[in-house]
Structure formats: C-alpha cells, structure tokens
Length: 333
Image (tube, rainbow, N blue to C red):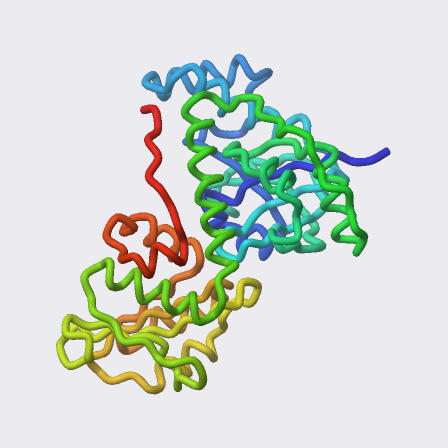
C-alpha cells in the first residue's frame, strides 16, 4: 500500500528547516496548549484555544485545532514527510519513524513533534508548475495530493514523472489564510523569475536595489572582480561614508560556507560595510563567521533579496524594473 505524504512547514519561510534535519524531527505548535493527548477530540481543543484567545476568529480556531489533531492522529509511522527551505529553494523528503510526542524543549516553538529519517532533497525548479502550486498552501500541515506525491517520488528515484494536476488539501484554510497563501505564492513566482536571471543581471539587480534605497553605485565589469561586485556610497565613488562593499553569488543550489565569508572579509577596510548576497543561501558556519566579523556584515539570501526588492520596488529605476517587471496589486483586508 502506498503511504501518504504530508507537508510540514518549518516555520514561516522555512526558518527551522536546518533544525528539522539536524534533530531528525518535524514539529508544529501555536501558542502552546500543552500535550495534545489530553484532548479527546478536536472540539475540546477548539474550546481550549477559545478560552485562551477569545479574539481569534472561528476560522482561525478551527484551522489551528484541525492541523494539531491531524498531526497527532492521522500521521502514521512509515508515512512520507516533506518540508521546504525557502532560502535554498529545497524540498526535504523523509519517512516518519515514530509516534506523536510532546516536548517543549527539543524544537521550540514547535512543541508537538514526530521523529523523521530524512532521506532526500529536491530543487524546487525540478517540480512541475502544478506541483509547485499544490505545495503553496499556507497551512503548516497538509496532506500532499497523491499525484504530487507520485511526482516527487519519481524525481527522487531519477525517473521522469507525469506533471501532477490535483488540488491541494486545503481543509481549515480560512479567508485570511487564503489571501496569505496568494501573497506567498506571488512571492515564490517573483523568486522563480529572479532565480532565472544571469549572474551579471543578478549583480545589476542588487545594484538597482541599493540605488532604490538612496545610494549611488559602481559595478564591476564582467570577469574577475577580486571579491567586489558592487560598491555603494552616497557619492558613488566610495569616498563618502557609508561605503558598502557587495559580493553577489548567483548559485541557486549552492550555499556559501565560512571560507567564502572569510575570503570576502579579508580584503575589507575598517570603515567598510559588507553585504554578501547568495541566492543559494548560507551554511550555519557562514552565518557564524558573519556574526563575528570585525566589520558590519549582512548576509542576504534569495528570500531577503526578494523581500527587500518588493519593499523598495516603487523607487527602482527603469533598468532595475526591466530585470524583474512587477505591478502593484490591491488585496481585500
């Protein structure tokens, strides 16, 4: 019998994906109500949430309780589980190896956990458009449609799958969650388009973002750049402070490590500010190296780049907008 597959999101933006993998777990939790085994059914959990959060809408109460009870009761040992690291645009796939447990210390704030054997990873770009759309639900936990499951399993096995075309299981997704889902799907589409840019176009996009933030920029010509792709400053020459030195690495599926950060820092002056952009994300060691740097250094992955671009898009120039054309959309509130 083919096992079910479940998506368990690793926090907003996949922030806890590394912890999921490192600890061999998946977990969920909202405003802890304690061990879920104390509640005989969903209705009892809804009432517990209602008492604690009387301002929550009925849809939010029902949605939270549905996912928690499902996590406790419906997932089974041997089921497949999927989580997404949006900073690296990677889906991680594994197998559930144990039953539900309540542990507020092992994976905070996700106090409801299950053990997983993580076995494979897939680049988002390898999935069909229909599969990517199906996996776009904002629900923290949902059952992956069978056709999408089959596509993922085929990709992991090195086969060529038929593109899936089943709708997502969106039980418990209220109106506000649906609107959030549409916004998040739009952001993922922007990230798809940014990822398709060439290396020099990516450099120009970062320079354009800095101009939109009020700086003047100077870009390195294509070819060896000695670790500096863009210099941004008030005067455009780097004489006036702040002088921001930028390195841009457009390798969508390659996380930058500590050595790359050390190499970038090696040539910096004491008054420099550093910005390191990596569309493939950063390793934990790279982030540690940045935290202990002697100059202010910001690491920006694809999530951070797209978020900043959307925030400042109204002030971008025509050259930057030509790289990633977007238009403003108004949403219901």
